[in-house]
Image (cartoon, rainbow, N blue to C red; front, side, top):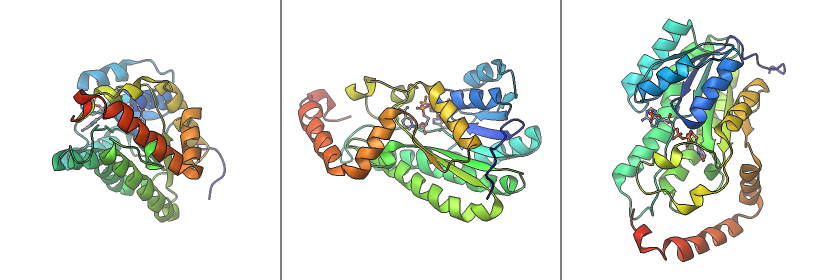
Length: 274
Ligand SMILES: NC(=O)c1ccc[n+]([C@@H]2O[C@H](COP(=O)([O-])OP(=O)(O)OC[C@H]3O[C@@H](n4cnc5c(N)ncnc54)[C@H](OP(=O)(O)O)[C@@H]3O)[C@@H](O)[C@H]2O)c1
């Protein structure tokens, strides 16, 4: 086990979800610290803007595509080895949510969220393993959610995907240790991004408009976690408060969330069905 800080300068990193929010901020932060980033998402023009941003350190190149497409994942990893000369890190930040009661949503929504938030990051990492194993100091970063620590209503699909991703991160951490590949799980709390505007299904709920951590702060915490070889981080006081409540007061979360569901969501006829 290595104890010295990971040197990000010169690392070759794939960052998914890099067209907005946490993924974009992380791509920039890593490049500022000297990493060479292959940024990916579907929106090409956003990636072009990102690649043109001054970093003062590493370079950012891009490859646009749908991370849920298995062929694109193969193409992405091949692009990293061709264009960056290898692969030292994968930061799986692409993701999205759906809002609605499980009974009101569909099997298609369930499959889409599981595909985006669980299958895509997992299979991208599987695809990357041969190249990561050849790196001097490799790492996989999964951007998860505090909702993996305790679920909330109206997020059933998303909570299930992020909880499974957290579990997989734990398995991979043990399995990949023999190859020297670190695994960092990020339990992200409320963060300023386009998340609520990009819901796969459902409308933005009122509680999403509260205080949120800037994406740049989340990105700095992710880069610090990579450097310090952390296994799991929960950035920000809101996220940490939720993590403590999830561990010690899960019944209280259920009580408050259930009351909120009855008094706010169920009381609003427009919100009964997404
Ligand atoms: N914001 C929060 O409060 C919060 C809290 C906990 C966890 N998270 C997690 O943080 C991560 C980043 O989300 P964010 O908050 O930064 O949201 P965001 O601003 O909406 O960013 C999501 C990113 O994922 C990309 N993406 C979505 N579907 C894709 C697909 N099929 N193929 C390729 N790329 C795709 C989007 O790019 P394109 O649309 O251009 O493809 C975008 O770059 C997600 O995993 C999310 O679950 C967020």
